[in-house]
Image 1 (cartoon, one colour):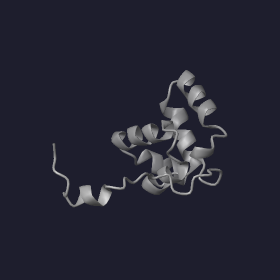
Image 2 (cartoon, one colour):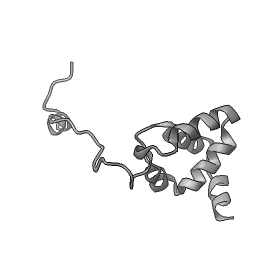
Image 3 (cartoon, helix red, strand yellow):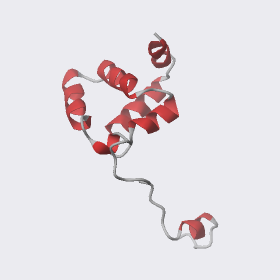
Image 4 (cartoon, helix red, strand yellow):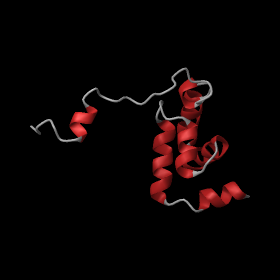
Length: 97
């Protein structure tokens, strides 16, 4: 019952963002859980409710067994990219063109 309450309290904008994150190959379910408080099971439930049947089947086939969607299966420890010039850019040392 608790998962139904969490999903029910989400705004339309939150639901759109969750669907977008769920479709992204590199976004693990853990990231969705951290941001929105949903477990993998709840994300699957939400996707089933919100997507058309054909889209649901396509998404499910794509996600099932994909190591990048499951942090425990992923071989990548830190998937975030940081440019070598990031610090310079952040401190506005490079002129804007």
